[in-house]
Structure formats: structure tokens, C-alpha cells
Image (cartoon, rainbow, N blue to C red):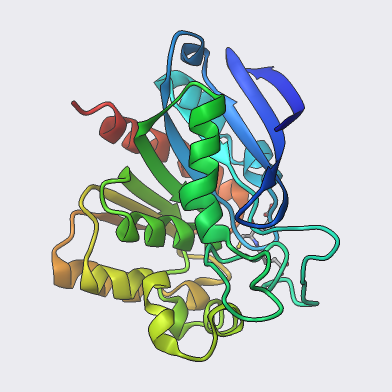
Length: 277
Ligand SMILES: N[C@@H](CCC(=O)N[C@@H](CS)C(=O)NCC(=O)O)C(=O)O
């Protein structure tokens, strides 16, 4: 693993690191903020999964999470959204290929050789963090934005016991019924829709739900709201009587101005779950 940069921030350290990934078969870069408390021993960790077109950098520089994580003594990790580089397949569209991994393990060509973002985020990167940093893997929580919100919700429901809490900003809620989903799941996983179900938060909510608290914010002026389908997940949450706060925030759009506005509440929500004894 190579240290790309380390900067002091909010009493802790904002680092960027690069490593050879087995899951994606190439170099991956991620951001990691460690609060001051990490000097004294392992701290809980919040995962932040980013949306379409993002690298590890967007949320790291625009979501304003570090101040609140420092206050709560929590680390936050910003993985990339896909494999990248020469020899990695791509598409001209912004919503497929590099920058659009959708947090699945691709089984179809030309994506299968590198696009294993599920394994990367669920298995490889947590192990790497546990080995190299003062991170307590028994206390993890997860959040994300848009495609990353979809990733956070689907990881949380598929890996019971892994995350104490899950939240999302403007998540893609029902990708099997959306143009932000059908195209990508078809490309990465093939035409058999039964393979898509474990990557759809609404279907997972109907089938199994989440054993912990959920917080979701979406803006009423989100320009992509028809693709996100918050109403589908809301129906499933109500049917299941799942513990959840689903909020429609008046006038907010899809941008990081929206994300950063509600970040303090999301970090504090996760801190409550992470520090519960
Ligand atoms: N406007 C974008 C759509 C993608 C988009 O809005 N991406 C969101 C996540 S779904 C984002 O975070 N973009 C990068 C940023 O705002 O820094 C495009 O058409 O390329």
C-alpha cells in the first residue's frame, strides 16, 4: 500500500492511499479520515459510498463529513466507485463502466475481469483497513449518496450483523425498475433478473429488511427523483414496519450542497448506533 497524501484535518488525519486490489485486478485509491482518538487505539468506522461519476475524492472534499466524524471519534472511509485505468473496460455513457461500478460483482463481458466492487467494499477493503489502520471492524456503519446509497442499503441488508446502522442521501431505491439500474444490472449481471434482486433495496426490504436503524434523506427538488424512486422503498418499509426515518427535504437537489447540509445528522445518527453497548 502506498501513501498518496496525508493532511492534518480536525485534529486527525485525512489520508489518501493506493493499493493493488485482488478483487478488481488493478490499483485502487481510497480516502480515509482518522480522528485524533485513533492514536490511542481502534476507532469505529463509517463507510461512505459515492455516486455516479465520482472517485474517492468528491465526498472527501465536498461532503463536510470530517468535522462531525472528528467530533464523534469515528473514522470515515471513501472508496472509489469502480476500477480504473488502462485495460479496464469503459463506456461512453457516464452511468456505466468507470465511475459507475454499482457495487456489484460483474459476471458479464467485458466487465467481469475488473468490476467486482461488491467484493472490494464488502471483503477486501475492510480487511486492508483492519490490518493497516487503527480501525475497529466490530463497529462499522455505512452510508452513501445516490448509486452509493444503493450500495450502502444493499450491503447492509445482505450482510446482517456487519453494520450497526445504515443511512443514505438520495439513494437509488429500486434499480430493477429504474433506468439507473436496469441498464447497469443487465450489463454487469446479464439478462436473468433473478440475479438482480440482491442489488435492489426495495426488493431486499420486502424480503429481509435490516436489523438496525435506517435514516434516508432525499430532496424534493432532486433532479433525478424519478430515477431514485424513494416512494417504492417507503412502501416496502411501511409494509415491513421496519425501523426507519425516511425524510423528504424541501427544496434540496441532488448535489453535495444537499449532502453536506444533512451530514452532521447522519454522522450523529451512526455514532448513536456505533457507541451503543
Ligand atoms: N450530472 C451528472 C449526473 C451524475 C451525478 O449527479 N452524480 C452525482 C452522484 S449520482 C455526483 O455526486 N456527482 C459528482 C459531484 O457532484 O461531485 C452527469 O450527468 O454527469
